[in-house]
Image 1: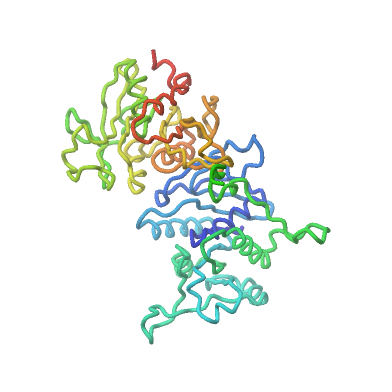
Image 2: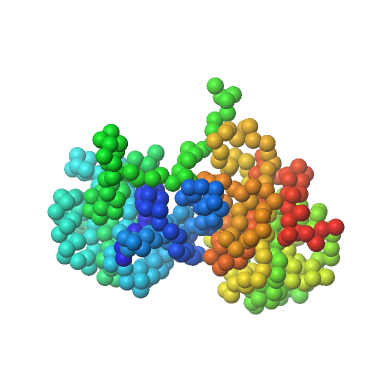
Length: 250
Length: 220
């Protein structure tokens, strides 16, 4: 099966994208990733569609699945407790390794202000592959004409610094990628250069980028005026920018 | 920043988790000064409660730099059981448990072997501006009560459930997460108020909880 997971990163784009995937595909909750590495948080079902299913409690790290398409998604809803991000990655990847999933897809984002001139002029989407992906996957991705994440100077201030992959604002993305390479995990990282703000369009962009490759949802409508792909926004996305305004303000 | 459980009477620390030492069928936890005041006035006054333990911890929110000699007036976390029915436990937690201490607190209190035949009730407050609603918060009549319950909690709550997209953090969230994952029936009663200091009206807002099965029988 395929495992999707977000990295808690700039604009929370990875997490918003996972929300879209879970909500659109109506994935069922199959379990929890109970860990002491993430700040605790609870709330009622964020994907509720009706009164009946709105009272299920959700915690900060949960696993959802769609058996018919062999998809599993891990959603992370809070930030790391200090010094716990590396232990979390280690625990996560050893679980991934033992669960024998075919591929892990990490959805993430990086600060758009860190782009160099070339990056500013190209598409904002990037990918990264670990060496242990099958050739077929590597070839498919190459055929899509996607841009691979470029290396940048490890220490920008020093002129002859070595080049390496850097993902500023990506949270644990780099750690996951490095551990993925060293632990022989077939992993694909998909990210978008974003700025903080209303990141819903960025999340939609990221899932459409993912969909170009995996086709997890297909265009359905015959109506030419409707958007080609229907992504369902979860009910918990209401009031992202706070409560209603007091009328006395006007 | 370590969380330590000990008995004040004997000055000895607890070797095992609290619930391992004191098996419990009902656990009522008050977090924050108003919730603590509610339990003190309504529940602790109606029965004889004996102190069984105390949690000592330090973080930036504590008013004292002396981590050894915390006096009783300082914010504290104390555990009691009912003398007439020692399987009923109560926790009065008026100190802030920081994010790197919440899981430690859970370990020291609940331990690693979750008991399923117990029921947990948590009471706490949050500021009303944290509450997200499509109306403006200035038109809300605070204080008001909202509930969040785990899957295994089957009774109807005494107030409406917390609507999406509202969420809860800190120690109450840590307790509820633990109970949800380990299938322990638990309910959190959350009072949204505009007064975070000790306030009689806020304390009074918890009164509907007195009629719940968790607290019935404990109050005269």
